[in-house]
Image 1 (tube, helix red, strand yellow):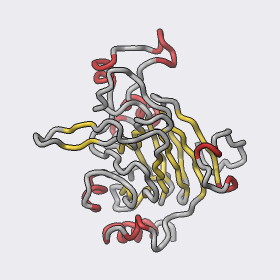
Image 2 (cartoon, rainbow, N blue to C red):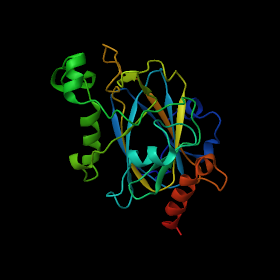
Image 3 (spheres, helix red, strand yellow):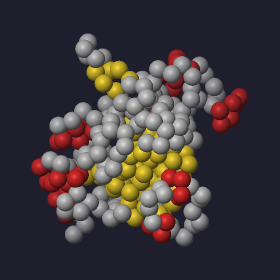
Length: 258
C-alpha cells in the first residue's frame, strides 16, 4: 500500500486506535489479525502507531529504503550507536548506510526485542503441530520467516534480503547463564508504539508469534495500525537529541532530501 493514496474511505477504526489525533490528519487505519503479514511503502514524515489490541502481541518488522532497496535496516549499528540492547522511546532505527529509516517518538511498552529474529516453519511445527492451509484455511499455522518472505517477494526481494528484524511488543532478557529468556506480559492490551519514518521506506511485517514465546497454544494476537502525516523529527525531538550519534544520523539522512 502506498500511503499517497489518501482518497480511499477510512475504515471505522480511527476513533478506537487514535482518539487523540485530528481525524483530518489520518491517512488510513488497519486491523491486522494474529498470524498475518503485510507490506507498505511509507513516505518520509509518516507515523504508524501499532496498537496491541489483546495483550501479548508480536510484530516482526523489516525496513528497506523506498527508492534503493539495497539500503536496509541494520540492527547491529542501531544498537551499537545508541549503546543499548533493546528499543524504546527516543531510539531510532538505522540503515546500513548510517541513515535513519525510522524513529520511536512515543511508546507505552518500554521494551522491543531487536535480537531474536523470527519463527520458522520447523519451530512452529515443533511447538504447535502442523495445521496446513489445505485442511484449515485461514486457521493454518503461519510463521514469521515465510510470512516475511511472501511480502518481500511482492517487491522483488528474496531470501538474501531477509536480514535481522525488530520484534515490536516483545521483551527478551539474558539470564545469569547467558541464555535468552522471553518475558511474558511485557505488552498489555491497549499498549502502543509509534514508528515515525524519517525516509521513504518499504516496511514488511508479520504478526506471527515471537520465536521464544512459550505459549503451547498457537494464539497470535490482533494488532491495530493507524497512519498519519506527522512530518519528520524536529530540531529538538527526543529521538534526535538522545545521543550525539543520532544527531549525526539525522544529518546524514537529511542530506538525501535537500
